Every structure is written in C-alpha cells, then in structure tokens.
Length: 243
Ligand SMILES: C[S@@+](CC[C@H](N)C(=O)[O-])C[C@H]1O[C@@H](n2cnc3c(N)ncnc32)[C@H](O)[C@@H]1O
Image 1: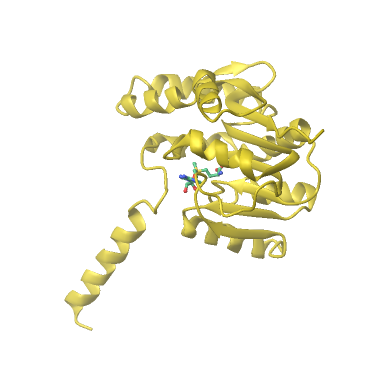
Image 2: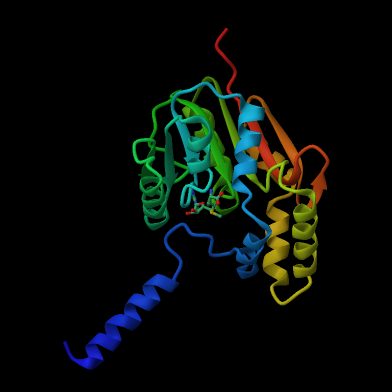
C-alpha cells in the first residue's frame, strides 16, 4: 500500500471514529462529558431503581443502554441478567467487553433496536430501565407506548435522566451550577434545549400522549434539586396487574 493510501485510510478511520454512531446523541452539548469529573452517577440511579421499583427477578431490559452504564451495576447489585437495547452497536459491544472483563458475560446481553419498535413480545418484561435516552428518541410517546406494551402486568419501568438521589449533595449542587452557567455560555442554545427536554412537564406531556394508564413523574429536572430525588426527572410506571 502506498504512503498516500495509508494516509487516506487513516483519515477515513479517524472520520469514522469521530463521527457519531447511529442513534448517538448528536444534539447533546459537548460540555456534558466534563460532568463525569464530578463522579459516577449510575450506581446511585441503580439504588433508586431498586428502592422505587422493588423488581421481581426475571426479564430485565436497559433501554438506550449505551455501554451498559446502568445495566452493569444493576447486575452487580442483583445478579439478575439484563438485556441492553440500543441502536448503537458499538456502544453495546463496549458494554459486552466490560462485562466479560468483569466475569459477567453470562448476565449481560445486547439487542440492536429502538424504543419505538422493541423486538420483544407483549407483556414479557418484568423491569425496564432507561437512563439518559428518552430525550434522544425520535418519538418519545411511541417509545412509551412500546414500554407499556412489553411490560407484563405488575412489571415496572423507570425512565428518565439524572444523577440519582444518593449522589453527594455537594456534587449535585456543583452539577446544577455548571449547567446554569453553561446555559449562558458558548453552547447556550444546546444547554437550553437540554434543560427544556428534561422538565417534569415535558415528561408528563410524553406520558399523557402515550396514554399510559398509571404513572408518576419524579424529580424537578436538570437544573433544580428535589429534596427526595436529587437532580433529574423520572417516569415511574407499573403496569396494572390483571384483576
Ligand atoms: C446519553 S446515552 C445514555 C447511555 C446510558 N443509558 C447511560 O445512562 O449513561 C443515550 C443512549 O440512547 C440511545 N438511543 C438514541 N435513540 C434511541 C432510540 N430511539 N431508542 C433507544 N435508544 C436510543 C443512544 O444510542 C445512546 O446509547
């Protein structure tokens, strides 16, 4: 291969690696990644899931799972297997790699797909969790109708975004302060949209449009701290059990 061809191929690879994968959050503000320095939030979200959903063992789904940031600590905490569903194959491949590294390859599985058309049977899922994903779905109301379809009677879902109620208060306050500042910085428009999508009223609107039978919206959004829930917004739903 000539030197030019090698240079061309390397450039192509670089372009592929730096462009967003299908379904990735193209509209997310770039500054979001900097928030990771405040500490991992996923394990606190897992604690909220277990406290609020008290799930039965069984068929558990992490919708918009990414690299399994919620699925993996959820398995570590409970030993129940989890199926990741996400349009982004590369992210889930990375999650599977991490699971294998931790000896959890028999507990984590991956399915390529989207919330709006889940490849699961009606009334089959015991627990569905989804963090940081609904805000990127093409049609959140359709995704929520699908959640209602796949949940078995008595099954629970916990969908939204946030740091978890146990995330340290100081870090939560810092997170909110950083976001408020960024809403007036160079990425203002993206941050305003980010916050807008994470309002409890927006979640209510999606849930109502999906005609969900029973649900509760928790939290006060991306830049307001709720004394019970900390920072974030969540939709908690339980499919009514048959009489
Ligand atoms: C911000 S990441 C969240 C990853 C992980 N759940 C977390 O808590 O860190 C959003 C994920 O939603 C996925 N996503 C985007 N559109 C989707 C859709 N229509 N259905 C399911 N997942 C989707 C993206 O591919 C991405 O992995």
